[in-house]
Length: 351
Image 1 (cartoon, rainbow, N blue to C red):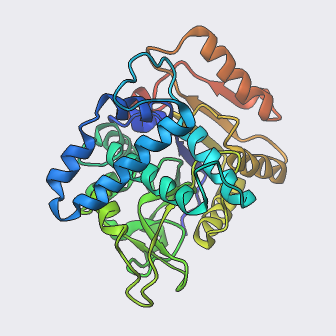
Image 2: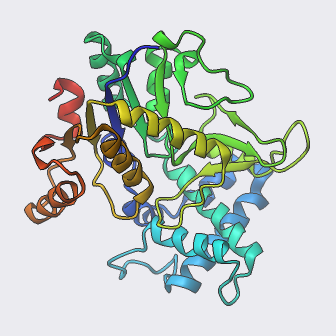
């Protein structure tokens, strides 16, 4: 296998450059596009009841827990983040508790409804892979693609689609075995793409313990609507989505997510250079920080760190806080290059 010495970590800012909303913006975008449900009912007339159920759950959730009326929201200055919403529901599940009016069944249904929402907002038919394509094209032209591993912390499939378009689907190595997609046989020509937070185009059977990959032809929202009624072909068990929200209370029991973390652990230990693209190093992402600290300690030194997370609307104070967040974490501060460059600049010209 080609020795990987460079790792590119893709955060939400990388996806935003190609049209995806940040997690902190997801619900604001949703409220501004209230026609989502009407559009879905028209697009999927045979699943009207299914779409309507998600609409009711989301409306109730925002009103009951956050005091936000979906029809009267314009006086709201700050919406709850996706992490906050999923964090409340995840913690209730972990503790085996509930909220008044929200038993375990309704909590689980509400989680699914929120996945429905992000499936629509991050649907690849609404996004363009312009910057992701520029990045892959540059790495190919520099003969560095097979020597670089990607760790995407995003649920969207922008980087997946880009690799399919510019290489082939069969050359993507996700670090796990899908029942319908075998890992590349020629490791030297494969591209390693690890998604430790899951992906919108994965479905998992908890009985057969297998995972399915759905190719680019499946838009996430189409897959979601299919998946809510999709049972495993082997045993009939309802399939589950593989999404790990960025909260302190991540549910890490999925065996495939565990495998991905183990592979990321291995890759980061051997990396000489790590590029953080569109990633602000949030406190809630403690599992990624844990991997990075293990790698640093294993190596006995800090790898070269480049942070490419600048954009036109970021204030000086935000930059100061973000820079300090990186510097306080890594042992050798001299190895950290907190650049003034954006992801867009990096995809075209590199460092």
